[in-house]
Length: 561
Picture 1 (tube, rainbow, N blue to C red):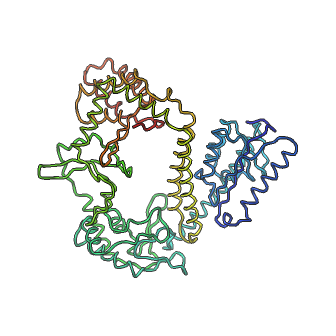
Picture 2: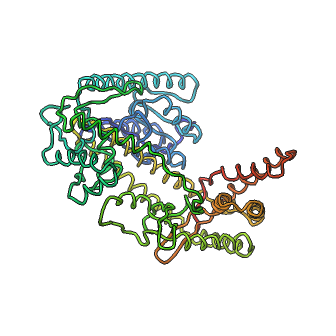
Picture 3: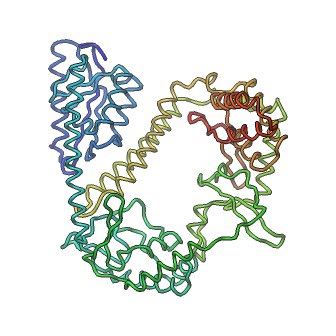
């Protein structure tokens, strides 16, 4: 830890858990900051104690986990040595979870960063202080878990009484503001639900039913009452129709779970669908699901499956096929867009091309791959271009880009926090918390890249010509011994990280990370040694292939075109 009175670079960490506290301009946030600034001012009177680098405020966010934007920003700044002392008014502002606190504590120790809590007044430079600190953390965690248990017990009791515990209100219902936990039937959308059940019994397939509903003007509202992680797409798809038909709330039943076991009770709201109709529909859904599909032989080998993307929107393009005049035609297309629009007569595809034939894109990529395998000049040119690109990159611009992206994700988190603030107390904020968790994970990835950026050393990260030639020789041996398409795909995707398809161009992103190739060659060497005495000559090859295809790309690798 940093020695005392050593002119600290100080970070103030402030947190409040309720929206009421966060919205009060003269409330807890301002009081915490004032107390911390006064403490620093007092200490600076007795010497050069330190100066405030930044103030990190997580407003309206619980300390139950580390999914807090400003906390993550603070931890990143600690790792980047911008901060060597964090101060807070009390320990519970930082964390109420023992496991999380130990993780934070380890980060502090690894980066020679101290911390101070005004309330507890810890001295963490000795073992007694550390023991006391961890003991207090145990009590804080105990308090939070007790609160969580009380909330869960209350939600369970409400569920047993058939009350609605919040979240997105299903299509066909609306919340009753005068009676929390009760739902009223929405006259505007009730008939849409009824016709969906009736039409499914008539047509007996999800896709045909969804298409009929869309063509005849029966569409779900885009907005969700009560929240939800995302808005509705505005029309019926196979997925959202399936969820609607499976929802027992429509027959007036409340479901809840106790230790992963599902229970049912009569709900306090009126049913839209009678039990007989609901059971018939769900019996048909089960029958359709259990139908055995014919296994087709000679399935087309999509060698770019998993690495093919749209250059415009970044969406994944999966391998599909259709039957034309000349037989089966394999192609790659936007998987999510196709699924989303599959039940619409008028499609809404935006990207061009929406699909590309496999016979066009695959030979193009494979021919470039063959150049890599056969031409040393191609390898040299590729590595030379990477070096030029790296040298031409303005590191500050890249850092600014990542900071802007991090700021944008922060803005999304704050917007969700604002939505939680105006959410009625009887509605569950869990869907919003789940969305915040996804955005927070994305922000953590950006922050990791931002942290690594300043330490990138091209010579340490870029594979050298000798190493990649060894790997290429090994790959050519595998392809010669066994030309099976599965082997071809695995070998190709060891070198190619990503293929982006545009309207008039194709980008191939090659893997040039030295650590990846060294790891793969080590696996090969170890496998050969362990199988040296195998009697079957093909046994060694099969084992090598299994290991060769199981290793994933190194996470730190940059994308080079």
